[in-house]
Length: 147
Image (cartoon, rainbow, N blue to C red; front, side, top):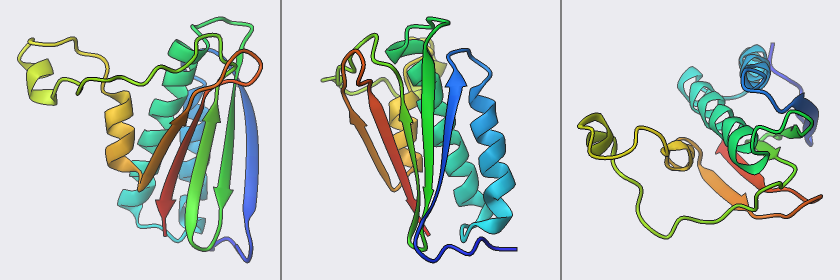
């Protein structure tokens, strides 16, 4: 049964800053999937992009500090589904000025195997924006998929 999204529906989550809790958001989006006006492949894209944003928030913005939290807001409208993932800003997001290594380079062992999260999010979401924050404000990653 599709959600009755007339204006907008919002869900807010606050999760422990521990790897594994990002799967709660994955499962929530999966539970919402039959109710969203998105094809299954687009739901999977959204799940993966949000998962990557959560992992980045835990590992980079919050530096794996157990007392920190990550905040996730899902916004559903008739036109789009948006996820905003916010960390607590222990480390301020610094945009990378060089192109990341390609998957082919990583597979060939010519580059570090990690570091594709932001590129992956940009490829999977229709819009991907990372807004640097500071202590108390936190970094935000906004992902939007149009219906």
